[in-house]
Length: 173
Image 1 (spheres, helix red, strand yellow):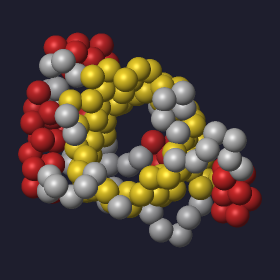
Image 2: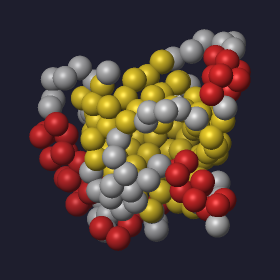
Image 3: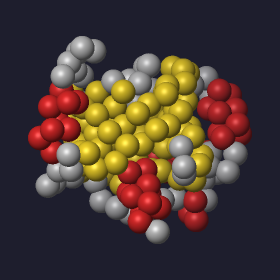
Image 4: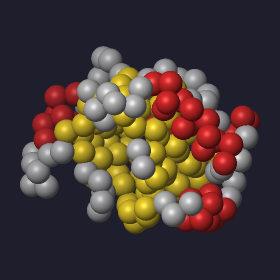
């Protein structure tokens, strides 16, 4: 299990965020069209991510709160021809599907997503990652705060839920 501290925020100007990241020599991994299938699970969240860059089964648990939040997660990278998604769909049922275009950047252990989410709009995420326990929660929080300030993310733009929660709420209205 790995640890990260992350934020999610509405993004009024995705081009500006990308310019700032590029000016800091962020490593641009590309634009990934991702389909995240969320499953009905009793604890946390579980999604099967299908993209042209990232493909994984992810289980994570984090609080619904605006601003930096701690997330414990487990990643599994299935084979491309795996029947895992079908198995999970039949066993658990699908909660919701999130369709997005994600621009992925890295600066050291910090991952940035600039997302265009179908039916929701533009967002950005900052994930400070401690994959092996060598960085610590305090340093991750400091990094997250540094990039919140650098990218001029305002408190009112921070969101507390996942895209899945936002879509579920939107379809319930």
